Length: 234
Image 1 (cartoon, rainbow, N blue to C red):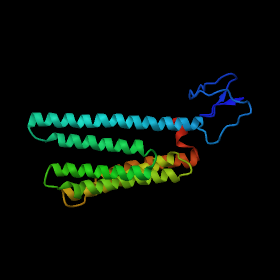
Image 2: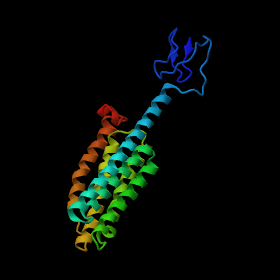
Image 3: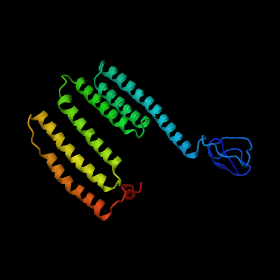
Image 4: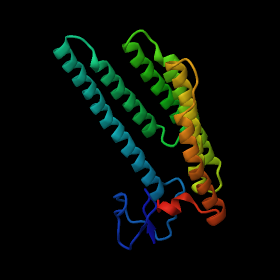
């Protein structure tokens, strides 16, 4: 029995070209063993996915900078100055940076989450800077954005440490969301009215609480240990 020296796939008798990777080699002795340093099918699949993400990133870069150029030129032609294109260009660039983090730092959440946070904060600051004086970013955009990413980080950490990832994760996500709504209303009230008057966020929290309790009950009592992906077949 012979094996492909490139990917390790077992070859039928008489085959010299691998049906998986296409590597062509000379006739091998039946007693040939697979070198552990060779690439195996799983390695090839991972390499293919990595190359695919790289190609998507390159294509998105071309689209991004083309879009920025078009918006800038159109704005200059129509208004003889930069106005709305500043917001469009900033949004396009921020979206591309987000996509870059997701594609090139795949599943490295300790890089992705801070990168997304910094990019979003920079985008909001530029938006505020484009409409002087700088006013709402420090009092509204900054604290709400940080609160949002703290909520996302909590959910990700719970997802990582949870032994069973079932409806308990959804329940915790709902509870974290209700807390984020309350924090958001606090900063919005302070910015608009210079006082705190909790109303709509309290309604949201009270409405979410029964849903979270039902999800926790389903997970821990009716379907204990059931994984979330088994419910949705993913």
